[in-house]
Structures are given as C-alpha cells and as structure tokens.
Amino acid sequence: MTHIAWFVCWTSAVLLVHVFAGYPLMVWLQARLRPRPVARRDILPTVSIVLAVHDGERHIRAKLANLRQLDYPAALVDIVLVCDGCHDATVAMARRSTDPRLTVLDHPNRRGKSACLNDAVALTRGEVLLFTDVRQRLSPMALKELVANLGDPDVGAVTGELHMENVRSGFAQGVDFYWRYEKGIRHAESLSGSTIGVTGAIYAMRRALFKPLPAGTVLDDVLVPMRVAAQGKRVVFEPKAMAWDQPSQLPAEERRRKIRTLAGNYQLIQLAPWLLLPWCNPLWFRFVSHKLLRLFAPWLIVMLTISSGLLVTRHPMYAVAFGGLVAGLLMVGLARLQPPLGRLLPLRIAVAFFYLNLFAAQALLAFARNRRLHLW
Picture 1 (cartoon, rainbow, N blue to C red):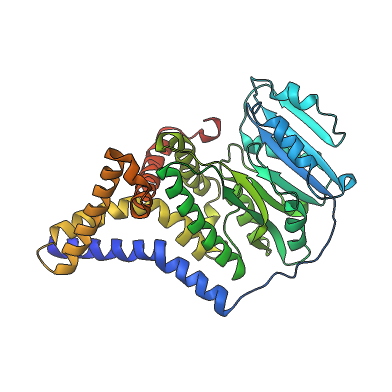
Picture 2 (picture 1 turned 180 degrees about the vertical axis):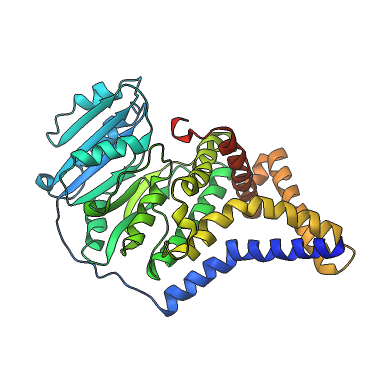
C-alpha cells in the first residue's frame, strides 16, 4: 500500500509541476534562447469578417459600430453575420444597419456556432478571414496588426490579445491573474514556434487554410489553429491586436461558460483523434502539456492530497505537501466566509485556481451526460 501511495504521490506531483510551472518555463526558455520572429509586412489583402450570434441584441449595435471603426480600407472588407436561432431583436437590428458590406444570414433554428461559421465562410470573398464574437470590443488597429503577421508566408493564423476590464470582485481579479498567466504561455509558444489555441474573440487566418468544421464543434478556436499547424503553417500571437471583454464577477456567473468550454476539449478529441498522434500532430507535445494535462489537473490534485496524507508520517516533505494543499483549501473557505479578504492576492489566486479546477472536473461529468455541447 505504501509503495502505491508513493508512486501516486510522486506521479501526481511531477505532472502538476510540469503543467503549471515546468511547461511554461520550458517554452519561455525556448522563446528566449531560440526565438522565431515573425517577418511582419504592411500588407492590405481583402478581409472577410465572420460573426456568429445567438440572441445578441444587447451587443449587436455596438459591435457593428465597432467593426466600422477598424482602421482598414472599407472597400477591402466585407462582413458576414450569421444569426443562430435568435429569438430576440438581433436580426431586425442588424438589418437596420446601413453598412453595404454587411450580409445577414438568419437561421430560425439553433444549430450551433460551427454550422454558422461554415455557412458564413462559404459566402466570404476575402483572402483573409477575421473571426470575432459579438460581445468583445476590438481596437481600431486590431485588423491591421493581425494582417501584418500574415505578411510572413510561414504564418497561417494569428490571434490577438484579450484584455479584461471592469475587474471588480476578488474572483474576477483572480480570473484576470490566471488569464494573464495564460497569455504569457501563449506569447512564449508563439515566439518559439506556434501557439496551440487562439482567442475566439479575435483571430485571423488565411482563407485558403480553412476547412469546414465538424457539426457541433465547440472549440473552433482550438481545432482551427491545430489544423493550420497540421498544414505546415505557424499560429502566432499578436499583442498589439487588442480586444476587451468583461469577466464574470462571481463563480456562479462563470460556471456554465467555463464547463462548456472545458467539456469542449473532450469533444475535440472525439472529433479529431489525430490530435493525440505525435506523427499527425506537429504540436503534439504542446497540445498534451497545455490542454490535455490541464483537464486531468483536478484529479491529480485529489490523488496528491490523498496519497500525501497517507504518507504524512513517512517524511516531512509529505507533511509539507499535504499541509500546503489543505491550507489552500482553507484559504478558499476563508475567502467565501470573509469576502473582503478575498481581494488579497494569495486568496484571490487560490479561489480562482480552486474554481477553475472544480469546473474542469465538472466538465468531464457534463460531457458524459450531454454530448450536444453546441446547443447549451
């Protein structure tokens, strides 16, 4: 029994260290020691902006106004808006737009984002596709900054940087801290080769590299860039192409969106099993380290807690490990009981870490219960 506990403890600890510290350090060192700079060029290809919306009446007017403010020749841009089973005023508001570049597709029955993106891309004319979401605001220079990266023939797709604004609660501050950590990893991946995911709110790609998405795909912002990499092109990160969004202020607000997104990783493996094959996926190590092992992190934490607890009398380091895990859980409880203390940096990081891992564990159960994630 002791040998099993020892094996489980050390395996869990090594994998957790690799996921949250070892892999980020590895790509950071690679970016510093063997950087692969992008040969940016000021080019002006034709661009098609693709936007899929479900019940977006609160944001659609501001979003269309935001797209008109992009600093890019209007004659080179067209916009395709697909309304996916909208039961509010989204369609009517969009059709009142006087922008001649806008095409509105209205599907009365909700089919999911992937079907909408496929329909929209089929109508586009641009050499470059810009994908964005209805809620986020893009900077005026975002499109030019993205396209400049595509001036490098080795680059097939490029994502911008999403910033959080109106970060009020301790939970939101913790999520913002985690998002900055995530962007740091993506930046290092990009500087050393390719990042494995893009931000759905702002990414561009060569139209010739787009392949229709499988029905029901949730994580187009992972599958699309992985397909680009599989075709021999880089996927890079451009921090000058900015978008802004507002985080959830409370865990309950974040729960549904995060569980759906995390469950989408399980669906992704189901739809594209080639991602698990090193000889098919050129970014296999990064995909496993950055995406897959994070899904297992909550279970690794549970196994580490139990195994270190069983070994706590064997050596002081097991006591330290077990005590640290218990202390982290107590910090989460303290932040819940005393919300003002939740704004302290250690507590807000602990709270965000706890809930993001809790949602990752719940995502597996959610996917097992409901495979039709795209209709959530």
